[in-house]
Image 1 (cartoon, one colour):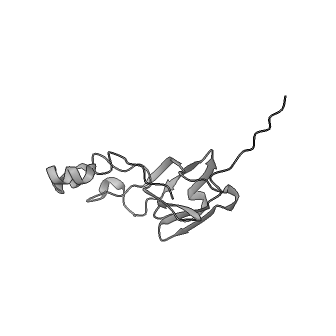
Image 2 (cartoon, one colour):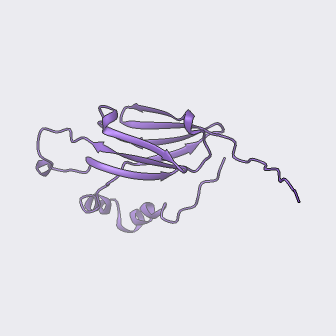
Image 3 (cartoon, helix red, strand yellow):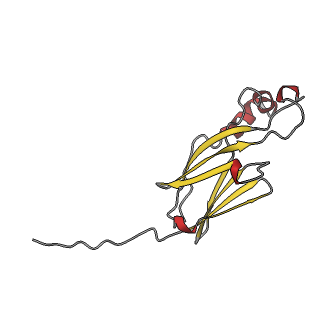
Length: 142
């Protein structure tokens, strides 16, 4: 398995919490709303898994997926579920609307064996991993 890449921004939330407190995030939510679905990426010995948080999808028309050059292209729309206008919400933190995201896939996989499952607001993509290291023989000819 690959080691997780070290990202210096990963611990930023905890550092800001230490300095500014939890109230900072509540105050910042209206200013910096989420514009893409949240993603978890993990791998086991035989599979790579990408989980995308996509609440409220009703059909395959709500989301489109494409895999090309070890990148996952995802495009869709998270439907607005309430009978009132967004502007009338007393507090609105959740993201609704159109989104588009490109995710670099950090493992080798067999694209024809990709399985996609949607359950309880999470789109789960299961990639069957393929051989990562391939020896190449060199033909010396004169």
